[in-house]
Length: 637
Ligand code: COA
Ligand code: HC5
Image (tube, rainbow, N blue to C red; front, side, top):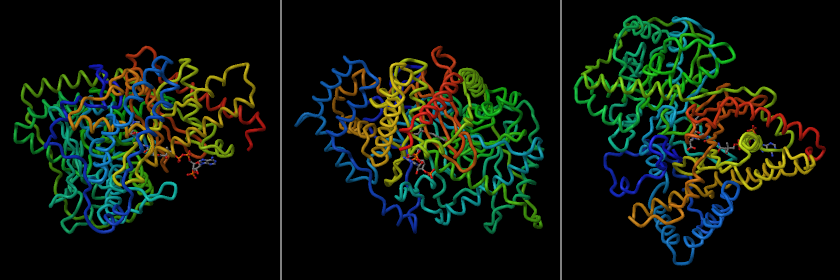
């Protein structure tokens, strides 16, 4: 996504023109599903995503290139940009096209974004797109504890779902501004569906008969579990316990065919395998039940044993990809938007398919669920007789068996390739930057810049997610954390010839530059989505793609060696994702008041990257930056 495809080494994130020439009617873009009441009134009141001025984007693009490209590349890029933006040139024409689109759509970007960033992206969703989330380890260590916790978790999700269904979810705010709430309506009852060239997402929440079941997978076997009584009341946690026990009893560990592993495949391969799998009516019906479920609950088997210090990293792996076919990778349906995962040893978390929503709504839901599970248990109510959960059957032909084997092999290679290091930075959290009157996020980003520079003696294109939910149907924009100011700071930091006061000065400037880029991004005035939009206008109008896009410097600007995201949560969670380029890192962090949870990933196939080493380097950078500030009187501004 937004980088270089690992297998084919062609640029992805910008689809080849051919796949966008003709609109594909099979694609159901993620849409607004609520069309009534409070929700709609709120949504209507939100501003539309602006189209930034062309000249502004061109200038900011050149500034963004400065710290990450060579002088000659910069000179060439400046020439191309000048040509692009000249009066009467192609840039102006594309800008007019984009402005027209902005006038006639709810959000000029959202449909394109879902297609380009997700549905056209063909690498497996596992590791390459779907994030994992690890909850604090729960207090159970056996099957009964697993079932008990899972039962409460289901009840907690349904409690949250009630707020979605009644449209009583409180509107969120950022910097005093109300946020778009659409993503909340997209995460339950939806599923990605593989296609031969492009996927789609189907949301079943707003159909005439919205789903009343969840999918449960245990020992690689799938079940449909009805979660409402006939009068519409949700089952109680005790009732869920009874139902989950039935499922576990009827699905002993045995030699079943691990169909779930198919969802870990490269999307083209899965698209083909899906066509084969769903030729059979039983299979088609079973797949449809999973797709239509409210969410998936994965009751996992054992995970590979680890020493205590490696626990969080191995839990992150369990959430991100399941550990390979020997462990839990087939105990999933990775196309499902939301999968809760509960292990036998107290390990809990989730994996989510990214197309319909960003992390924060998922995290809000999970925070609610965790709070719910912590409530004291109510006195048991009389139980109603409950129908046995329906086992979902699959007929496995030799052809499907072959697909499964291929998927197992590829998944195991991917699992071997991914290095994941969770680091709980316990020395301080948001508190320290705040006392120094600095944005904690900008401070952490500068630590990442310093950590990377110390390892590679260069700055790299860096992606940080910024929310655009201040706009109707807004998703994200890129904060380019590598700036000229950050480069000056990291170069000076270990330079013995530079005084501490000057280093502090450079840090303050770098933090401020980051903060102002963030403001630009969240107010729709940054460059990346605008540049993408202009390119998409050219693609759709079948115009020649302007040279700025085909220039190697643009590819370099999109080659994010550092792909990062801040995802805060109330619960002390660790969120994680994979790198987006073969020689890159994925860094997700959750800053709490007095500590910061980091999950750093890299690929073992790349000999230049090492997640554990970057994690250590980040730790050192954070500590060294604090020491610098503590030692310098100028820090207490
Ligand atoms: N002095 C003292 N305190 C400061 C400060 C300063 N100069 N600047 C900021 N702070 C405080 C803030 O008031 C805030 O306080 P809180 O902890 O009480 O809320 C806190 O520090 C955090 O602010 P900051 O670190 O600047 O970050 P942010 O919360 O503004 O987040 C982004 C920045 C980019 C992460 C955020 O705008 C965003 O877009 N988040 C969504 C990202 C996303 O969607 N990720 C997932 C993608 S799937
Ligand atoms: C549960 C936390 C998930 C965070 C996922 C995230 O940050 O995704 C980014 C989405 C975006 O549009 O910026 C993409 N990224 C993983 C490549 C940073």
